[in-house]
Amino acid sequence: DAKTTQPNSMESNEEEPVHLPCNHSTISGTDYIHWYRQLPSQGPEYVIHGLTSNVNNRMASLAIAEDRKSSTLILHRATLRDAAVYYCILSDPLNFGNEKLTFGTGTRLTIIP
Amino acid sequence: NAGVTQTPKFQVLKTGQSMTLQCAQDMNHEYMSWYRQDPGMGLRLIHYSVGAGITDQGEVPNGYNVSRSTTEDFPLRLLSAAPSQTSVYFCASSSGTVQNQPQHFGDGTRLSIL
Image (tube, rainbow over all chains, first blue to last red):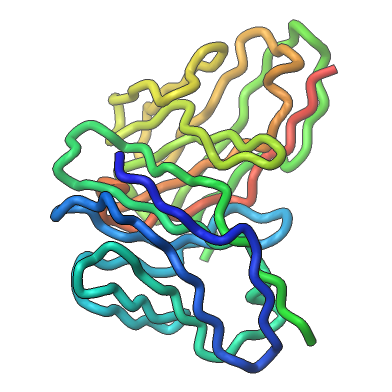
């Protein structure tokens, strides 16, 4: 499986945008890029996923580099509730029978009031 | 919306005891999975199911059994609890393969084995 690299931790001020980076230089052409987050004492929560084009939903935006070797999760206006561990995960739908998403250690995001 | 419901939320067992962790989803999802999460580590897949009557092993299946008799339920059984199974257990479901469909997670069962 292709690996991802994320910073261990980041801080951001409340009500400001947050850009969470993820490097995946060995990504294959069919790998999807997923982002999940895990709030304290809760299960992981799906945030967004994409393949090639930038994606937007009510929670966040996903900006994918043109060469797909990196991506950025954008929280447009951080709130205290966004403090969580954010996981960047690659997956390949052509990897038949592999129903495992590999959650690494992620980026711990701290929001400063 | 209930989503994925896990019971119990907390449990303490003695070594050698058995128990079943319950997981139910009300989204009519075909795919369901069990993960465990140990302190400072990512989630590790224990078992998964791609539909009723079908189960398969993940990366850490030893000591656990699963069955999938209905679409809604996917219980995880600990056969003979060991201290190494102290962990937080998460159940998840998705409408299709996790490789390109969002997974929905429960809030977890925190299990301690003494």
